[in-house]
Image (cartoon, rainbow, N blue to C red; front, side):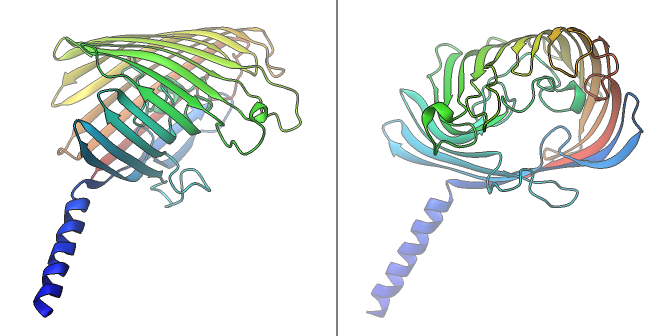
Length: 344
């Protein structure tokens, strides 16, 4: 009897160990010193968590079902390393909570995740900008806002690869909630394609948020964004080109072009980029319908090990016409950053 119980206990322990072998705990901690000044504002010096890569911890796992099918999950929570607080108050897994199935059909998933152009999370397909969606005022999405970042109540599908080409589609039944009438929820729609083969990376993404939930306020217009990116890996140098067209609900109608490159130098990677934005801003706070803005940025990432790297960044932005006196570092000002990133 005792031997049977011992045998069962050993088998039970083995089963738990086997299940746990498919589950991974991971994370990123990034902290640094940020010096910045916006036009007409004071210079500030602060500790900054996740300036480039958001500090986070997560759990991911995969179970193989056989015949090429698998089920997996990603649970990822963001936090602020400088004070230990949640990155997004009220959410236990603020960055991603995603359940998916894969097979010969591609990948189908559900939950909270980053949008196709968010630059983060498992469904991101954005290409073409060396500085990505981090690095403050040099973030490719800094002029768009949060509607195209992360959304709730998602159904996301990605096709298998066709010689490096994949197609993606994503729908959110309610970007913040879907417990009321469908017509009163904010919905996200995204379709895109990404090619990654033969030293080339390229993507084309169309996204929209319909802004139906106005909470008693005047109805907002639908937001539309198109992103195109292209990269060509030449070995030590990867030049990139990016374009964005945006039509935002507050009245911004803009075109943005970016040229950037990733260069291997001194044992690390130098990232440089310059972009130019022009268009209209019909918002009530704008003094002129026409707007112009440009910025330049450079970063250097030096790996101390496979898991730890030092990061330095400098960026400058300047605007004219309707945004010439905008007191926002994204449009007018500079940033300097020095920090460290550790992943586990």
